Amino acid sequence: MSATVAQPIKPWRVNFKQAWPEIAGAIFAVVLTYAIVSATPLKGKLGFFVTLIFVATIVAAGISWLRRDRKAAFNSVSTVLVYIAGLFVIVPLASILYEIVRRGIAGLSWGMFTTDMAVTASDAPLSEGGILHAVVGSLYVVLIATIVSVPIGLLTSLYLTEIKGKAASTIRFFVQAMSGIPSIVAGLFIYAIWMIALGNQYSAFTGAMALAILMIPTVARTSEEVLKLVPGDLREAGLALGGTQWRTVAMIILPAAQSGLITSVILGIARVAGETAPLLLTMGGADALNLNPFSGYSSAIPFYVWKNFSMGTELSIQRAWSGVLVLMIIVLIFFSITRLLSNKKGRF
Amino acid sequence: MSTIKGVEKMSQPNPVNSLASVAASRPQHVDSKHVAGTGLEARNIHAWFGDKHVIDDVTLDFYPGTVTALIGPSGCGKSTFIRILNRMHEFIPTAAMAGEVLLEGTDIYKSGTDVTKIRLGIGMVFQKPNPFPSMTIKENVLSGLKLAQLKVANQSELLESCLIRAGLWNEVKDRLDEYGGALSGGQQQRLCIARSLAVSPQVLLMDEPCSALDPGSTLRIEETIRELSASMTIVIVTHNMQQAARVSDRTGFFLSDGGPGRLIECSTTSEIFSNPKDKRTEDYVTGRFG
Image 1 (cartoon, rainbow over the protein chains, first blue to last red):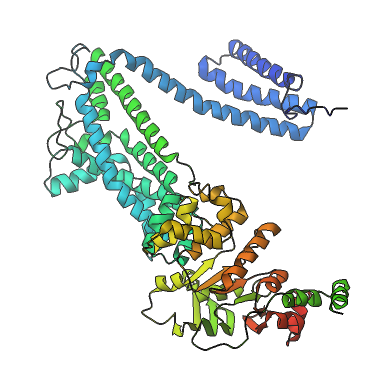
Image 2: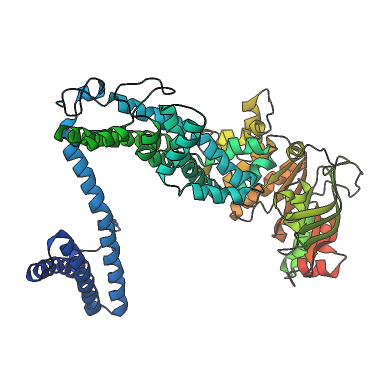
């Protein structure tokens, strides 16, 4: 007599027999909503969705109540609301992405990345001119802002978590306050102090300074949260092995928190990559490629987009949409690279 | 005769006798004489957290080449006491202390002492295994060298000898480049012991090193402790009296009567388990309280 061979099954998986009332309920809710919207003065997509929230909740609650009890009814109400909330986040995001690709793709060409707008008018045909100056400018400002803010932000977070000095609570308060300042204020601050009071000129570096003001608090706060997650055990173990505080932090704490710290840098870059307002005040907005980040007017992609939108002609608006698409692609590439870097094994 | 005596002891339910026989069955390779100025000596140690007095006047000598077990109920200051022995106590912001800790006759709390050197000489193994997550097994063992910026002529020899002494070599010799987190809990704890050995400390402090481990790993670590005791001074805090009886040469009993913790009694392990001088020690080791 041979033993029967056990087959792996998932008894907890919902099959059609159990799920059909829910599926029927969902279809019924959509049909009912459609009927209500056609029969009443409620109009359009918005009316449809608002009605759907109410109808779906009531239908789901009713089905659960009939099949089980009151507790199940409350449970399905919350489930339906959570699903709808998720839908509300995904639908606008997806439609924004779709719209950017749809409108931006028309103006996309290789020539766009090899030329600038120095001799081209905004409403010249799309085969002329390009975005090179803005791409280079954006890379400069983001790179310089990152180089300036990451060390400052990281050291601030180390002060808050490792040194825990007397000023820690004050510094934490100011970092939080700083992360709330509107970006135009950061631009005005650099404009007033760095340019007017100290006599510096428009340049990519000046723009990067404004972005750094926005980036430092983001990096400092997220790094602090990440460093707080590193177990105190590891600090003690490092110190108990005869390490100084600096060597313990550099050899144990920072590597242990590495992937989280990279995420904090990504968040900082995400904060500033699309900023327009502070750059309007600090970069001058050149149309020609400027390879020197420390002097002369220069541009950035958000600046380029703003400039072309404000021209208002059909072709310039097309240029703006393509600029948005390029910015999105660059940010995506950058995120992918940093994600790959941080996905090492054996970390937190 | 002796066999019969042993059988009698086995059949008796009295835990004092069974622990005493465990303690007595181990070779006692130390005489109880202590030479002043050697090993580690704690003199009139007090400790506070804020206003709370947690250790009251503990004087205790740890002889070179012996294992000293510290037993006692939770909250009687054992862990605080051994953290004072390698200057880890001061990391708690409200902490304060009084007294002297002499290593080879020199107070480790004397002003101007290089704390990192002290901790290099007095290693510590923690309750929870804590290998460094960003390092491989090999890097973990050698991390102390890098942390303290020590140079060693032959790293792979040191790596092997530390892992052998910690009883881990056979299990990890083919996977030295894997991350330490991939090991089981017991292996991680032995990795932490190997890590402490790499900087060749004179004293090794162990704060309940087996409390998170299964019996097999515990046994393995106890063997490791026995093997290490020939070459260094070991202090082990444990809640497991069987363990104290199995591994230690001397045992100190701590107790707090609601106030600060005090050292009630310290003697050879067989003495503590067979013939304790203090009634409270007897009550504790027989399991009548605590």
